[in-house]
Every structure is written in structure tokens, then in C-alpha cells.
Image (cartoon, one colour):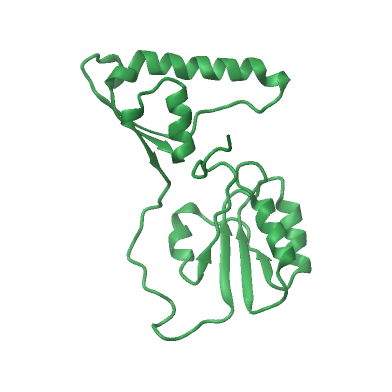
Length: 187
């Protein structure tokens, strides 16, 4: 393994550190998680030359766990991009305005419930929102929302290799998140 070679410099790309859910019952798990990351920072920290952490909050969390701040940089996911020809020609409009959400149908981390609440606040209009995803505790609620709301449709799951191409007809891809790490933590 590369990590066992003491002469190797390391570059890391990582999501935010794994945390157990809040609450006193998970206190032991959180302590183990913190100990694990601190051990990694002590063992490999001097060899890490570049560390991309998910979002500003990821950078803050890894810094608090002992990783050197001067090598930490925020990053975000970006799917492989191919040249995509626009569906709408310049100077023309396409109605309705088409929105899409692609991902897990979950409250925690994804924030899909916030998007669902926003739909309830919109009055009619010439827009459409498609939900794409195969699982999550909000699946039944989204199916119910799509059945009662004329501007909303649930499309099921898409093959991940086809997502970029299938986004072509949409005007806006909505990515709600309660865990992405880009907003600053309140103090």
C-alpha cells in the first residue's frame, strides 16, 4: 500500500468526516469517530501535501480533527461533462419552465423536504418539476405529491451513466442539501 511507504507524499479527496447521529446513545460512536480521524491526522498528517474536503465545513471539520489547514481545500462534486448541445435555440423560449431534482429522496442530508415545502407555496403557473430517485423515506410522500399536483411528476430512478444526457431538456437542476458543507456554521 502507498500509505505504508514512509517516503510517499499523499493527496486526499474526501467527503466530510463520518459522524454518528446526535444524541447521548451515540456518544460512544462519536468519540470513536473523532479518535479515528485524529489518529489518521497524527499518523499521516505530515505526509499529506494536498487535501480536498467536501465544502468549507469539511475543511473546518478536518482542521478541528488535527489536519494541517495549509493543505486543506474545499471541493464539490462535478459529474464528467460531455459537450451538450442546448435544446433551446438562442432567442426562443421553451414553456413550461422545467425543473428537475435527481438524487436520494431523503430529509436528512438531501433536504428534499425543503423543496417539497416550496412547491406547496407556489401558485399555478407554467412550470414543471420532476423528481428522479429510487429510494428514501420520502418516496411515498413524493409519489403522493406528484399524484395531487399537476406541475409535479415522479419519474423513478435513472441509470447514473445516463444522468448528464437526460438533464438536457431541463432548464434548472435543483440540488437542495442540508449537509453539503458550503454554508458557514452558525456560531
